[in-house]
Image (cartoon, rainbow, N blue to C red; front, top):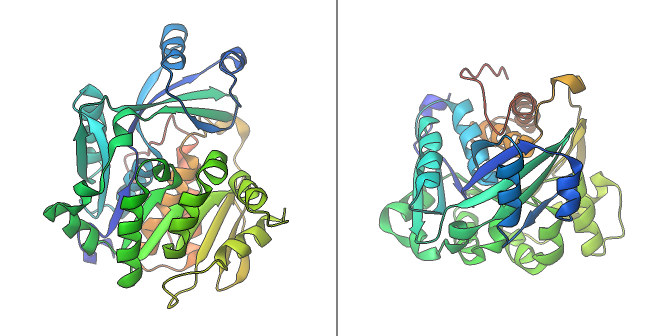
Length: 342
């Protein structure tokens, strides 16, 4: 089926980052006042220096949206079905990122900045991962890059556009421009809640994009924070998802779909106002290598099936399948062969 899809059917816009990943001692988290399962932004270099000095690190192509797009491209198979935009520096890190994405078959359209490429310290303790991101170049994406002829042609040809919520800290203007384009042309615009701090401190930016959003992704912690910050008075994940689904929507021709993952607990979805639950196949703790990127992989699997026109049950099944692969490997990486069966 993927052979019939046009190029650039799925576009991701986000923060391209080089992940610097290591399994660390809890005292590193304590020293930098970090939680074991969280994502934050930093302007400091110290955490990267400590990490590289004291631990054996892996360098992995990262950035939440870029991870998702790589996974979707891997599942779809046919080259250049997925495109990606974000801002990087002119350095070795960006070369590594472009290499990995292009190897996967993604059509990469980076904007270049004189700042260094962004990095993310991935601190793994047991089953948890704490993400500390220094955006640098990623913070300098501008709407002018979108408006360049070839790039805007990719935007208009995409049937589905996805941004992790992290992009809200960088270019809401770009997100709104593309989300409105999708809304006016019956294309699918997708957003991920991505991290509790975004629900807390970028509440207004998120609220400005949500009316144009057709699919909202998140996990149970993000959903709980969203409910708390917006005074929903709800703790049940299904009810929170339902409330998000019912928020005002510009394009009324389709209802908003909300998909919330809960680790090994069932995936909760709200479609046409109904709460649906999809069980997650259990995995032995010993088999889990690294949970970093599991959520990104889930969205990649889901959106690959979405652009193929598959029903939600197949999309969730593929999302769970991709996440399951991801957590048995280091970083958001996949095996050579994709053998998903709908």
